[in-house]
Image (cartoon, rainbow over all chains, first blue to last red; front, top):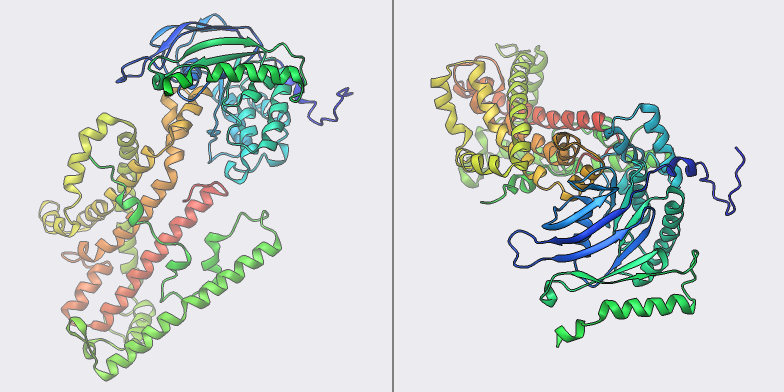
Length: 279
Length: 317
């Protein structure tokens, strides 16, 4: 098979295997979450329309409800009010159509890398050959073929996060939900993973909702950045302050003036109003 | 309501090297076997270093038991009087015990009614230990998983279990003789009682400590709720369960001496009882050594079995 990929990537076989996910849009309408036993809403009035294949980052100070939003999308928490629809269907509990990548990986320590990746397709009771095919493809997609027989504890944090990403790719999800996935990684690994994630997003065409603390990361990755604010520390519910379209061409230059202007603007939005309640 | 993690920590058997028991002739092969990595994965250098360190471990293990045997020998010869009122003149000399041990196993040295009977007694005891232990594991592991996952089951059963648990198994012995009668069944019941709580409490603790993250990961990967217990919770709790099994197996051997005291003619406990009735201290000490070795070997075999099943999988803490 003649490969015509420019950047000497040996993982070209991954492209057809990961590209077939049927991405879905997400409609979040007036979503609110109140935890049992707590007085107010942790998050309220969140309305976001996310297009198929879009890459959306969610930023905001601690306690603004961005992780809560992601957990409701994943189905780990039920909404107290409002609705979430993924591909038109309302979310009811966790499911393989909505893949989650956690900051602390959540890999199964008793399974090898390859077994971790094969886990999802096996749960779907796919034929053996398909399971193997998908595992191979996902291993290639994140460059892990060399360590497929290792156990998670033998790998570095960056490698473990690659396994976690490969594990959900093997499930061909419609939506990829990522909760500060690179937050525990060192800067160098982190930027490598960001580039890799962009490539995976492009190839798989999957819809991504990516929660992060890092505004730079958000501006680098996102089509749109959702800025959330508030939270119980501010005496109100976490809510969407603004949705900022990024609009910069891909392969973004983090040192360009446009990039930094946007970064400053979002930074101001994130921190706006915090001083008032502090004083 | 306290989470019963006590046994989980305190009773945990020490590391392998620390458990090389004094009387065991430190054969580097058996001492090394459970530590050996999967064949083919470890290269020659690694293997050499491992066996060297095992050899070094064996060398370190030798001096203390040798010294103890020497002191024992001198103490008996000199009729030492030790604290607790231990009168060493009544102890058999190490040589007498060694003679008795050889005769017990193979006969031809002392030639009395005990000669060559060791294997019969050892087998009778091993069978009872295995039956009671297997029964305890079969009850405690599933029950522990349910109690660890279900708050209702835990609240329903935990108080009762912790009320029964402090009753020493030795206190159950007279009652079990009366309600079960003489024979195997009563001993197996006592072994069961001795091991069931260690397995149960460790399983509960292990299941409760399974990170919620793994359950979430399983859910979003498409695991049906009914299978989560078997696919995620159980494997994640395996290291704790194995810890519980090890403690329980040790306790099972401890209870033998009590469980085989009355109305039973075979078994190491029965042998010790007969020896006491005839004031045969050499026989008592010989059987004590056998029970110690049997418990030690049982633990080693259990770990070997686990490693055979687990392979390279990180299932042992």
